[in-house]
Image 1 (cartoon, protein in one colour):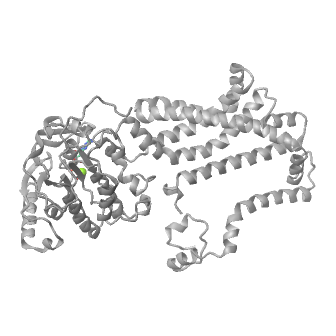
Image 2 (image 1 turned 135 degrees about the horizontal axis):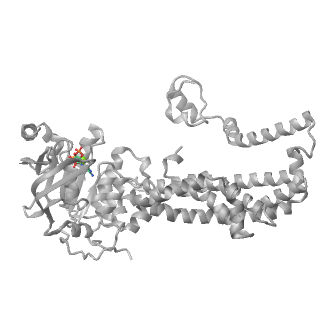
Image 3 (image 1 turned 120 degrees about the vertical axis):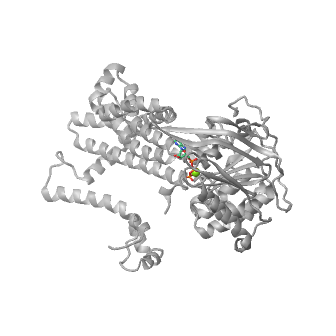
Length: 288
Length: 286
Ligand SMILES: Nc1ncnc2c1ncn2[C@@H]1O[C@H](COP(=O)(O)OP(=O)(O)OP(=O)(O)O)[C@@H](O)[C@H]1O
Ligand SMILES: [Mg+2]
């Protein structure tokens, strides 16, 4: 017996298919997938209370790429973890596909990409990629990617030929690519990424953005992406949620008006600079 | 030696000339075969050298055989009745192995509980420390009085001395799992059991192996001591005890030599297992 809870996988239906067709850029269908309303969260530690989140309202559409952008300590990670059911809000509600987050978690609706690659050092790249799908296999296994699909992702991120390598034989950037593929392999409709590229050097990081977009365009998953970087948020996202600290809150929301697919050349266009400028202004305005 | 080559600082086999660190790298990969053979044989040379010095001192200072026999005499003594030593070694190895295994299993149980509950850790840890700081030799007679003669008190003593290193390293190891990994497992709703067997236990292996290396020696101490006190009629500890009673210096030293050999062999076995099991671990990287 693997199951430990009586929860039935009646959370949101798997909203994702994995077409390998090069479908035109996926854009949010506007159908809400994640609805957050009035979410607040306090942390108390040694008598001091931190208002990590206050009255956060946010709706994320199915297939949308949303970034949470803000200074350190504004509650980005906390919000991401609340969406993923890894932390509970003190007040407010979060629903995913109409159900609650715990159901969504039990039904393997989430693919997580943490800040550090967090690979199993004792497993090969191929086994690491399959690690999450091999856990709790009985639930949500219909959506899990098959070997051919996973192999295709590994090829996409340039890891073909490294399937049998161990993490310590890879560079930091390669490890983070494994971590990305691992999250996509779950076949989850919602991908939660907490500063996945923060530890990488600037050049590797720039490449990773387009790799991520490439992977994403194959899956139509909904992505919630936490970042400190204004340019990163602008080049990746359909929409950027600008957050402010003390208390952690949503300060502004900006739709990024750039066509897809996004390319490195776009980063030189005036339109891109305009998007970045607006985000910077939002950040500055709400900086305490 | 001024070298800015962090890898070779820890690596005694890279005794290259001073100068350009790149030069060091280049030379390292092309160590001469004789050098390599020498490095390989270094441990043997160390042991044999020690025995040779011993042998020589006996001759030079003319030390009497019944006071301190020479290594050559001791080895000769073992050779004159090898079955005696094999038989006794077998008994001691078996006792040590059983005690070691019991300690490992019980300690893993304890470590699991302690790793999952801060309260259990705080409650059990002082007991473990007390157990560790109390000399076994002091309470060994008490165990015999309580349990009577036979194998049981020996196993109790052996497991008691091996228990603490396994417990402490076990807790450390089970706790050492990357919190990001735990969170990943939770994000797909992995069960506690999967979390334990697929994340915590493999993460604990490196510390468990270090505990194992410590415990091998302790297990031998435990079983020899057990044989001293519990009226055994076999084992290398028994052989030492009877040798002392009858002033059989050669048999005494022969038993000590065999114990040293058994301990070394067991340690090498553990190190070998560790190499195979932990190829992925940073401590095993070249
Ligand atoms: N488990 C916790 N216990 C106590 N305080 C916490 C905890 N988690 C977060 N906090 C506090 O809540 C606030 C928001 O934290 P959070 O990690 O969400 O910020 P963040 O926006 O992700 O910051 P960063 O960009 O540095 O990662 C911070 O002040 C932090 O100290
Ligand atoms: Mg964070």
